[in-house]
Amino acid sequence: MNESNTTASKVKTKIRSFIGWLMLILVLGLGIFVYFKYYFVFGEGVKSGYLNYAVKKGNVFKTYEGKIIQEGFGAGRTGGLTSNDFTFSVENDSVFQVLSENSGKFFDLHYKEYHGILPWRGNTVYIVDKIIQMK
Image (cartoon, rainbow, N blue to C red; front, side, top):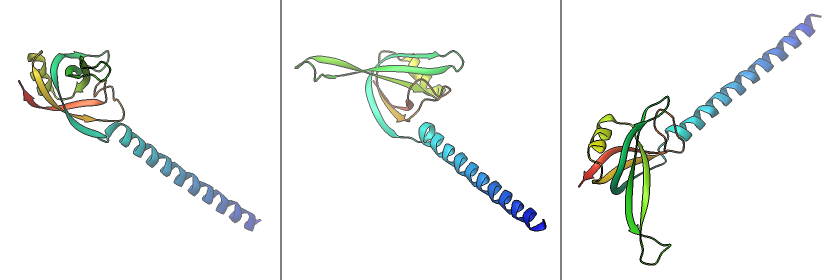
């Protein structure tokens, strides 16, 4: 009877150890997924165009949003002038302040691109972090 108790105790210990390792792997996997989905900078770049609008909006989280109009020659129409929109979010109050005071001007904006959207960061995956130039 003593042997069966020690065997059952060893089995319980192995099951607890397995469940512990499984939970650790799941938590680490979830952490890695969340990091790459929401915090890993997928791309960085510069977009240029005329600022269409800069607004503060949101139901729960008030975020700064904006849009610039990029001009260029469209591939759809031969020689036709088309516009491309670049919709973005802004985290920094001082960057938003400059944008909101200068609607209609030409900007060169540096942005970071993420894989996912966080509601307190903005409504887009493109986050403008600085103004390179304003004309």
